[in-house]
Image 1: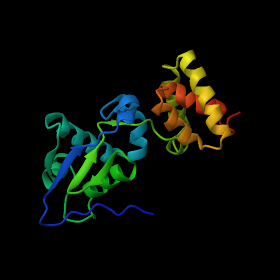
Image 2: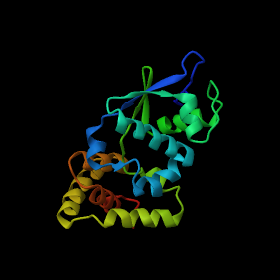
Image 3: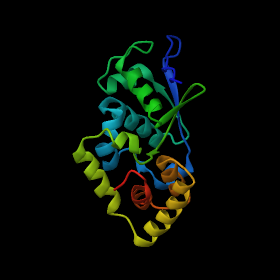
Image 4: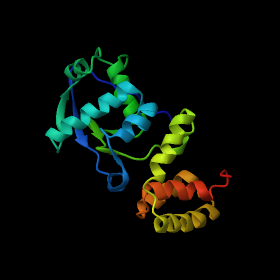
Length: 194
């Protein structure tokens, strides 16, 4: 089911921005202004949505419980034109943030992640080979042997039960396996790995 685009009406020149609390992503995720986001999420979101996300989180730094964002003013600060409706680059950027799960619609506004999860495998598969290699190296550098063994044992059980590799990786993260070990464990136990 396609997600309905965000719409802004003429009588609502502002949008409420609140934090999206997700304990799992907050434990294993990456800061929105991190090098990880610049290297890997930029390829998924695109530059305009990445900058919009950073701007939204910067507002949450100043107002941790949430704030009212002036749509035209914020678009202008990002060098974007703004008009009411969805046919403008700023609205499309905010919609991409929702589409890719770094923000979500809530009544009256958007809930925004302060940390984003590791990039999903399906997005990695579409990246240039050089970025895929960089991503593998990024995750392998923090992988401890005990954590990898634990992750692999759990992944083997879940895969043998028929779980999808992406579901397995999320479950490993949820039980405290490091992102590097979770990604490597899934890679090693996936029927597609050779």
